[in-house]
Structure formats: structure tokens, C-alpha cells
Image (tube, rainbow over all chains, first blue to last red; front, side):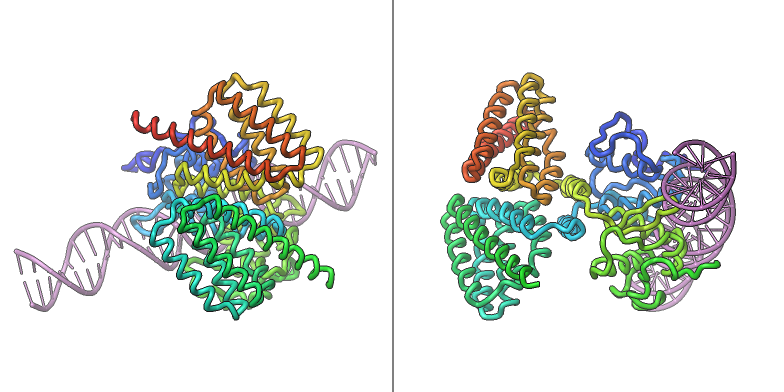
Length: 258
Length: 258
DNA sequence: TTTGTCCTAAATATCTTATCAAAGGGATCG
DNA sequence: CGATCCCTTTGATAAGATATTTAGGACAAA
């Protein structure tokens, strides 16, 4: 008892104060949900930076006036949501998580699977992301980006006869284009989508399809190198609409047979 | 103890293997992480459908050979990831979660905040989503959707003189448009973005700005009612590019002053 | 003296066991 | 038909044992 319990930590409870609730409509049914909500609210208000130490399990439990196990429940939830990180040891405790776009992509992918999103919804979202990304790529790509694009294209050309490997290379090329946008949100979303879309594309692949894809990739690189955002947008839009119609057509045929 | 512990539940452990061995993904540091991993693996193997009951906390703890609190830790994490749902009461227990796009939006928003995504990246992503959604809305909107659009427009017109309230109404209108696309991925992403973008738009609002926004909204409804996807896409693209340049301009000015 | 290694101690999360409270659904009784 | 009781299940608290990580001191070698 030499150290006051609230001498440590970041004064979480004091900060919550007025209802800056973005998610919660006030009353939470369970105690741990309430704690989760408070911490998340504080975090979202931007008063805590990634890497900040919030305190130990025990000290947080004291601050929030709940038992350690209830606090643990809340902390496990926050940990799973990627809001906090937990370290064990003498310098351990609860820390605000570093942002992690890899985790963002993974989380989106899991949720997409759980929700059971339909093929058309996925393809339309892919179109949305890639069209925008292509335009940005044509505006923002630097020489390293363009080099990466050429390498991805060469790899795809090399694998044009192997359906599965080519699909992987083609998605990688598309990923490079999205990466050229230098937009982390678009990039994370594309990665999440590509995980879910991969099996679809593998199924519809063939050497003939692959050659059309390569031709498209060449044209897109030309647009990006020429710094023509509108041309890149239109090219990608047209191409992906075509791919979509083919995929949905295949889907209809495939399901009619079952 | 009258009932055998494994008589209940869906035989999770039997699917994975004996409870004490075959920790599938190799070395997991903590016991609860092992449990999490096993359950998630089984769930994503597709043998369990949303709504299926996995058992009670206690029975699952027995199946996995851990204490109830450890099981609770694991279940909390899975619940936070949206993989399972927990119900209290005599017919309660652990269930495979129904998909929940609300949770998806929430998770994305939190991660965006943590990663510290920049304004331009957010605005570009918004453009990507809304342009696509507007085109889909013009293709797919039904009469109920169009009625909702008109109501949202009327609400915005009513609040044209109150900057903060109008901003809310305008974002609501945009949300209606995205909703008209009937695409849950786009909808969830827009919801996530709007939470983060809200403060930006509130700052840049004024009656004059509001009147331009209303004019845009009227034009967009006209495109959607006329079933003109390309016109809707171009309208939204032009409008949001304008908004973006204004926001970034304001941002530069604002930060130059600080 | 300086340096490097090993060991201990403290702080911390992890895990266990036990107990009671609250909520929810079903069966029983009026 | 309705109200009440009861059983099951999660929610929450408490106290304690165990494992892990790191700081810092002890000790030996150069």
C-alpha cells in the first residue's frame, strides 16, 4: 500500500467523463461490456497513443472498481479486437496496440467469411477498390513501384500456362497496383478481399483467360507510366466488369448443374 | 455428474483430436490461445453453421480439459472476434455467431483509428466506395430505397442552416445511397469511414456549403431514379473530388496556422 | 578495474478452484 | 390461462498457485 493504486496508469476512469459515445447508446447489459466500452471510448477520443501503458490487470481492476476476472474478460475482448496488447513480466501490463494493417486485413477477411458475403458483393467491392487504386497509382506511382509492376507482369507472363500459379501471380499484380496507390486502407481491403476471392478466380482460370489478363496488365502499366489516371480507371473498370460478368455467368452455370 | 460431459455439445474435441495432444498450429504460448485456435479451426473448416450450439461454458471447459475461467478467456476472445455468440439462461450457452456487418464496421473503424490513417487516404477510400455504390444504387434501387433517399434529402434541406446537424443529415444521405447498393461490404466500409470522417466534415461546414451539398443530392437522386449508373458515378466522383480538394486545402490552411 | 555471465527477486499475466448472484425458459399448480 | 417456482447457464467476485519476463546484484575471469 505504499503506492496509491491510481498513481499508476493513465487515469482512464477520470478521462471518460462526458458521454463521447460513438458506439454505445449508454447502458450496457454487463459490467465487462461497460468496461470495454469505456476503454474503447477513451481510445477513440484520441487521448491515448499506441504504445502507451494503461497499467496492470490489477491496477486497472481497481481503477474501474471491478474484480480482476471481470477486468480480464474485458481485456481479452479488447485484445481480440486489436485495441490493446498484453505483455507478461516485470515490465508487462496492458498497452495500447500499435496499429497493424495486416491485422486489419485479417479481421476483415474473417468477418467477410462469417457474414457469408455473396460473390457479387465481393466482386463489386473489388471493382470499387481497384478502380480507385488504379487512378491513384497513375498519379502517385514512383519508379520503384513501376519496377515492381513490371516484375509482377513478367512473373505472370511466365506462368501463363499454369492455371493455379497464374491466378496467384495475377492477384499479386493487382495487389501491386493497389500498393502503388500508397493508400493503406485500400491496400488492407484489397488483401482481405483477395483471400476470399482467390478460390473463385482459380476455378475460372485457363490459358486463354490468362493471355487476356496479361494483355490487360500491359495496358494498365502503360496508363500508369503515362500518368493517365482516367485512362487507368476506365481500363480497370471495364476489365473488372467483364471479369465479374464472366464469374457470375460461370456461377450460374455451375449451380444449375448441381 | 449424472450426465457424461461429452454427451452434450457438438463434439468439438473429437473433431480436432484428443484433448491433450494435436495442438494444431504447433506451439501456442498460452493455454487459452490453444483453445481459441482449435475452436476457430473447427469453425472455419465449415462443419458448423451459424446458430449451432457448441455447449455450455462448463461442458466446453471439460471437453478441452481446462478450467472454466480459462475457457471464459478463450470464449471472450472469440466473442470479440465475432466468431461466437453467448446467451445466458437455461437455453443459453455458446453458439456459432450469425454474421454481423455492424461489428465489421466497428472493427474497421477502430483499426483505422489505431493505424492512424491520414485524411487523404480516408477521403480516397470514401470516393472509391461511394462512386461504386452510386452506380449500383442507380441499377438496383427499389421504390422503398428511393423513398428513403427523398426523406433523407428532405431532412437535410430542413437542417441546411445548422452546420453540425446538417453534416449529420448529409452523411446519413450518403449512407442511404450506399445502402441502396444492397452491398453489405460497401455498406459496412462506409459506416466505418463515416465515423472517422465525421469530425472533418463538421469542421468544414457552413450554410453555403450545405446548399451546394443539397443541390448535389437532388441531382444524384435524379440519376438514380432515371437508372443512369454512369451519370451517378460521374456525379459522385466529381463531387467528392471537389470535397476532397476543399478538405485538404482547409487542412493545409488550418495546420499552417498552428 | 572492467567485463561478462549467472542467479535471484520482484512484478506480472495465466490458470485453478470455489461460491454466489442474475437471467431466462419451462414446468407445475392454482 | 396465468402466475409462480425451479433448474440451467452465464455473470461476477475472491483467494491462491504457477509460469514468465526482466531488472539488478553477485561472482568469476580478464
